[in-house]
Structure formats: structure tokens, C-alpha cells
Image 1 (cartoon, rainbow, N blue to C red):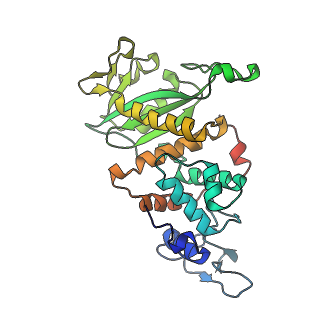
Image 2 (image 1 turned 45 degrees about the vertical axis):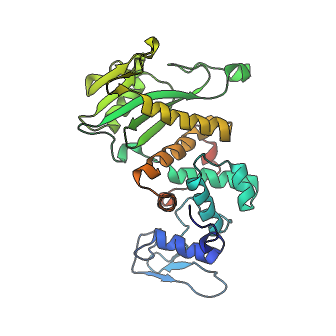
Length: 314
């Protein structure tokens, strides 16, 4: 846990310098044209601190341009503190808690949290490093997020094919002693999960699942073992899904115990947060400070507008 009295959490100038050093370790570059050589720091009281100018494309910018914090009126030190609090909290942190600790409105805290989750999220899992590999084992399973069907208005009740009624399907792949990758999908069937597995798993990976019908044909391309939960079989030598069930327990405790309600359009961002925390955990040698630095790096090249936070997922 970092010292919360560190100037980067209390002084906007120190926070800006820290953010610039993290984003631009080799020196400032233009976020519009990518030029290094033509960038100069602007001075003068009228401009304020942290402004740069590119003589090539003739545009002015700060280190926040091209990140999830672009155009935000909230001081950079509060952004860094919010990032650290969300990264260091082992049981996740609600927007209400951020609003109280940062001294901003609840609406601002909620939007900050959504932007930080976007910085944590893998936008294109197919371009990321695949999971598994020769001799490695992954566990595959699905879970469902949502309230009880009896509490839903009749107009909002619907069937989610492949499992729970009226809930949102979450499909996850967990590499033992490694990383996790989760997706919010419309339904769990062999047709929806086989392309994901083919895209995200390396050849030679051993796959462990339960005996659900959607997983019966996943072994066409890889070694595949199942455990039959319907007859209370949970472990058979190395065949089990205990690792992914443990991950789902963390996810459900966070959703039920802290967030209480997660809407359909934002579920992907919450999954990104839980995946990020799992993939950058202490057991893999990642400290709280290193985790916060990863979020700063992940904030670059992403924007979240009001319209983006209200866009349907499918």
C-alpha cells in the first residue's frame, strides 16, 4: 500500500509530473501526429502548467489528451488517488466510497470509476497474448449475473439461453497459476464459445470443464476433460474447475456485496476490473503501485464519453 500522503495524491503539479513521467518515459510526444522532435513545452501564466505545442501539426495538448481523463475538470491528483484506491482495494470499491474519500460528487465519482475500469479492460482480447500453451491447463466455465427473476418487472423478464432465466451470461477462461479472461456474451452455446476458445487458446492447451452440453465438443482441437457435477464429482486427478469457481466467487462477492447492482451495458467494464485485479495480483508478483502504473498505461488511447457509458453491449 502506497503512502496516501505522497504529494502525487495531494498536489496537482506533482501528480501531473508523475503522470507525464509514466506516460512519456522517453520524453513528450504529440498525441495527434506522434512526433517527438517538434514538441516544446509552453510557458506563461495564461496557459497554465502542463501544456505542450507541436510545431509539426500546430496543436496544443497536455499529457491527458488521448486518455480516459481527457477534458476532465477533476484535478490529476484525484485521478491518481482514485486509480490507487481502486487498485489497492482487495474487495473492490464503490462509487459512493470514492465520492466520500475524494471529495467529489457521486456522479463524478461514478464516471471516474467507469473510466478507470475502461483503462483496466482489454478492449481487443483477440490481439492480446493468448492463454494456455503446451502442457498448460485452463479451466472454462460460465456464470450468470443478475437479480432474482421474481424481483424483475414482467416487461423485463426474458430467457437467457443456456442457463439462468433473465440474467446476463459471463463466460471465462482461467489459466491455472496464471491469468483470466472474461466476456459478457448473449448466450452460452457451443456456437458462441467455440470461436472464443479457438481465438484465445494456444495449441496444446489442456481444457477442463464441467459436463454442460455447451462444452461437449470443445475437445475437437485440444485435450479436454470434464467433471460431472450432476453426480457430485468435483475432482478427478487433475480434472476439476475449482480455480474458475474461485474466480467466480470473487466476482459474485464484489457484485453482490459492494456494487449490489450491475447493469447490462456496464457489465463488460466490471468484468474488466475483476480480470485486471486477478491478472495483476500479488501472487503473480505485481504490487499495488505497479498495478496503478499499469492502469495509467492502460488509460492511453481510450476515451469514454457519456454516450459510450449508455451504449448497449450487443
